[in-house]
Length: 396
Ligand SMILES: Cc1cc2nc3c(=O)[nH]c(=O)nc-3n(C[C@H](O)[C@H](O)[C@H](O)COP(=O)(O)OP(=O)(O)OC[C@H]3O[C@@H](n4cnc5c(N)ncnc54)[C@H](O)[C@@H]3O)c2cc1C
Image (cartoon, rainbow, N blue to C red; front, top):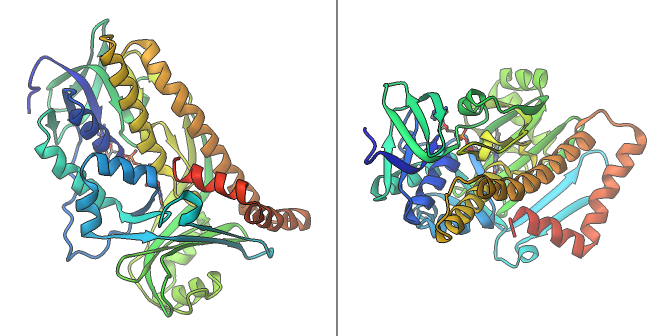
């Protein structure tokens, strides 16, 4: 599809949850947006099995989806509120509990399928007046002059915009094309995911247990089952994937301390490699990075897409301010404001999750084991500290 006019305000590359939300937010704000994506999201149908990829959405993400007018369709389709969070440790006695009241809400967030979020955003984008979709389309080259950045697509079309935003995921081909370096740490772990039925109800609670060299989360689903995220060393992931269903259910139940009784049924399993990847810069000339293209974090705190959606909020805010001041929306000082605000927040979160992963994820010495149990207990017994953690996770 050709561009509606010569130069768009913003070209967003990648229509995952973050890129699609940004394109919709900007179009709703009256910007002229191009959105480039190699493949349309698979359609979501209620009769389909629940997608294996789910995310825990924080209140800040839900507020954004409400403003984008997609939350009603997401929540009406299939979303599960979680009202409590329970964290405990297999090696030490401490535990940590959060409730909606810690963030002044009835719930801490919602568990939603990635595919459902993408589907609802995509449908809204088809109706949005200010969006030109290039799908299928893949960026193969990028050039910049004083007034615009031009993207060459694999079908030889050119898309030009005053600002280009890469939301093309952890591998971000566009970030690589522009030579922006990243700092990486391979956790040598995989997250094994599946949906399971349990003997007892999930109590609308997100459960997380720290194990020697592993973390195991049970996230509540709307149909009463739980979605598991079991982060383990690579070799252990291979072993777990190779078990038959009965063996896997038995090991899973034991690893979870049978907190919800026995695991009675399980879907297919999948595994995702885990790493920390932090982009050294978020901006270049008429260019910004957003979402996983800018930062990939360990999933133990369930914050990856929540951070990306906070990037969306911030980028929209600085672009609106620049437009209101009748300035260039891609001026360096405008993009710097976005980078300064989001990079510090994302770095803080990424390093916090990395520290938790290091403390809880390695072979334990006696002293460290005592310290990790004490740490959970201390946070739990100090309401102001606990509230601070809860409010940060909620994006407030
Ligand atoms: C096991 C696991 C559990 C997780 N749980 C949570 C959770 O509970 N809560 C949470 O907040 N986060 C969670 N995350 C993280 C979350 O899934 C990611 O942060 C999120 O999916 C990133 O979204 P994105 O839109 O930035 O990138 P992506 O979803 O990777 O989207 C990138 C898009 O760019 C497109 N693209 C790629 N190349 C090109 C190109 N050349 N041109 C154009 N388009 C291109 C792709 O097709 C894709 O549509 C979890 C991650 C894992 C692995």
